[in-house]
Length: 231
Image (cartoon, rainbow, N blue to C red; front, side):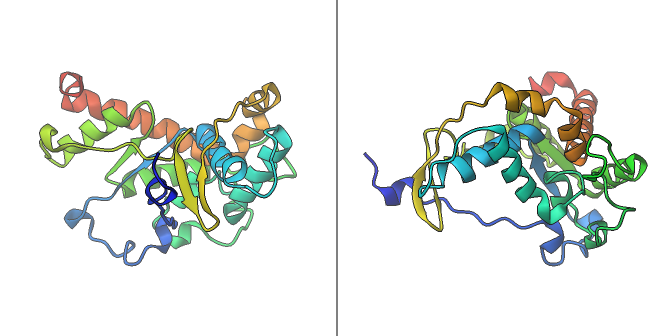
C-alpha cells in the first residue's frame, strides 16, 4: 500500500483568469490562450463531493439538496449573480467582473427562476469565445478536444499525452488538513429534480450558455479540420 505521502503529492492552487499577471496585455497574434471547461452541474457535484463530503473529516456531511445548495451558493458568492462559477472565472478582463450592479447581474434571488439581462449575457459569452484561441471540454469530449488542440498547434499526435488526475472517486487528495480519500457520492432524486429546475438553470445561466457554445464551436472546428482526423 502506498504511504500517505505517495498518495497525496498532488496539490494545486487556482485563481481566476483576470487575476493572472499580464494576461490582459498579451499579444493575441503572438500567443495562444486555451482552457478547458466541464459540464456545469457535473462540475458543481464533483466539487461538492470533493470539498464538502470527502475532505470534511471532523463532521459527517449528508448528501442532500440542502447541503448541496448551501455549498453551491457559497461557491458562487464571489461572483454572485454573474452566471455561475466557471463562466466568470474565465474572464481575462477584470472590467468584465465589475461591481455587482443590476446591469451586469444575470441572476437575482428576487426573481430566482428568471435569467436577467440575457442579451448582455450572450455578449459576454461571445466575447469569451473570441478572447480564447481554444476552449476544450473535459470529460467525455476530452479526447476530441485534445486532438483538435494538437491540430491547431501543429503538435504531432505521437507527442500528445495526458494523464488522468488522482482526484476521482477512490483516489486520494490533499488539502490544508492533510491527506484524504475521495468518496463516491450517490445523489438523491430531490437533487436531480432540482438540477432540471428553472431556478438552477437561471443560477448557472452563464456556465450553461458557455458550455453549449463551446460544444457547438468544437463541432464546427471538427468539421473544418476533417472528422476523419479526429477518429
